[in-house]
Image (cartoon, rainbow, N blue to C red; front, side, top):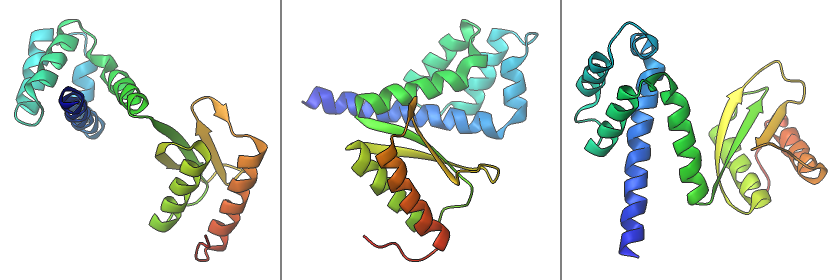
Length: 171
């Protein structure tokens, strides 16, 4: 079980490293353009990645990035990182749920939604919230490819009604 705990720590550490890389990519147009550039050599790209991330991510993750760049797959880094996160969540029994809402959620509404979805799925959930004022339903919940069934839809209607009233949540 020590081995399992150590493996879990390594997975968490790698996930943290990859999230650091993903958020750096999201925040830096220059780095994104560099990863997409066909004229910059893999060696130069690897050098840039090393310069940016040495000391910020583990050496194992750095070697993995070196490999990705050497194989000229760096433009796929966002997808690779997302797949890693999904596999880690799956291993840990966490369900990723995409929620699109027409309105901003308050922290307590987010917590209510989380609890509601954990009750529904009977698993730990990681909720990704997006605000899209254009959606007619007010609230769209996607669990993988699953479109929620009528009973859950009813729960969400009640939840939505509570949110739109803006009143305190009653449990």
